[in-house]
Length: 260
Image 1 (spheres, rainbow, N blue to C red):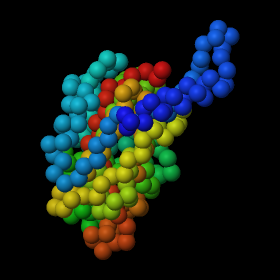
Image 2 (image 1 turned 90 degrees about the horizontal axis):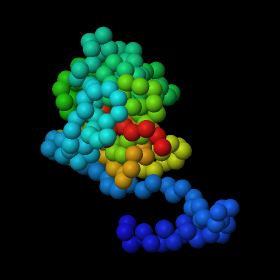
Image 3 (image 1 turned 30 degrees about the vertical axis):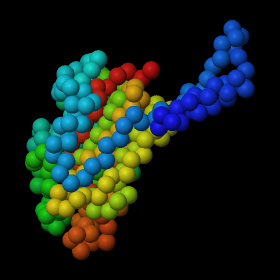
Image 4 (image 1 turned 180 degrees about the horizontal axis):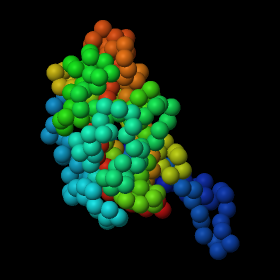
C-alpha cells in the first residue's frame, strides 16, 4: 500500500491543479476516498482474537456511558437484552443508543425486524439447534426476512450523527466463502471497505471480520449474512438445505465521534 502512496498524492494534486486555484491562489484538492489502515478476516479458533481486536481499537470499554468520549470502544454482545425482546421481531432499532447507550442504531431495510434469540433460533426452525452456536452465550441475533443488517452511529444517548474508526463482527456458521461480507460506508455514502467473511474452519463455527481506518470515517455498516434469511423450512447446507445460512453475535467498534 505504501508503494502507491506517492502516486495517489501526486494524482490528486495534479487533478486539483488542472481544475484551477481559489481566489486566494490556494490549491483545493478533491476529498479522496478513505482507505482502510488494516483489515482482519479470521476463522477457526477466534476466541482469543476477538478481545485482541477490541483492545486494538480502544483499550477501554465505555459500555453504557452516555455522551462523547475521546477514546475507547463499545461492544454489543446481546446478552443484556431484556427478556421481552427475546425470540420475537420487536427489538427496538434504537435500543443500543437510548436504552443501553452505545451509539448504534439498527436500520430496518427490506426485512421485517431484528430478532435476538436465546435458543439458537430453534423456535423458528428446529434444525438450527446444531447450526448456530453463540460466541458469547446465550444470545445471537439475525435480521428477519432479509440477509442484511445495517447500522448507523450516534454519540451514545443522543441524536448526534457520528462515525467510527473501526468496526468488527463475529459471524456464526459461514459455510461458503463470499456468502457473507462486511461493507463500510462514509458520510457521503461511498463504499470505503468491502471485506468478504472467510468460511468457518471446522469444527469451530466462528469467523471474525474487522476494518480500521486512521480517522473515524465509518458512518454506516452493512453486514450481509449468507445466501438467504433464516426461516421455517429454510435449512442450512449442513442440514440438507440448499443455501448457506449465517447469523451474528458480538459487534465491536471504536468510540463514535461526531461527523466532521
